[in-house]
Figure 1: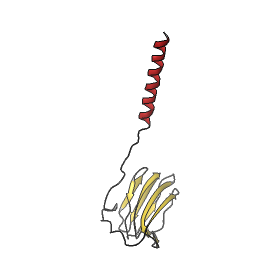
Figure 2 (figure 1 turned 90 degrees about the horizontal axis):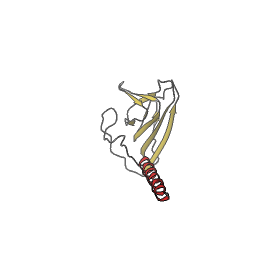
Figure 3 (figure 1 turned 180 degrees about the vertical axis):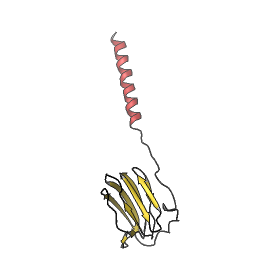
Figure 4 (figure 1 turned 90 degrees about the vertical axis):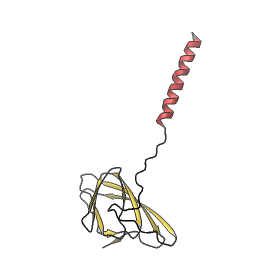
Length: 138
């Protein structure tokens, strides 16, 4: 009887261990891979100089707009929360939803606007050059 009980407990423990291992599986999801910005323009070559990576967490409150600006460097972001609308100088519009990635336009005037009722939170990665600005506002 004890032997059957021990075998039963061992089976339960091994099943639980296998289930826990399956739950902890590492996954990788590619959010973007491209040589173009969101408006379908080819990205420029990287500038010469000492590389400098900048990572920003930007929170745009409900109803708020970022100022008109452009980026002289390649940058990409992932919207963590909310919804964000990006409008280019040519009135091209991109609406980002939570979890979506953006490859930003380079050297083109644009701005972002949060038309929703909740904050929009985006993480943006800038691939710049030391001493060169990442954003220029109008």
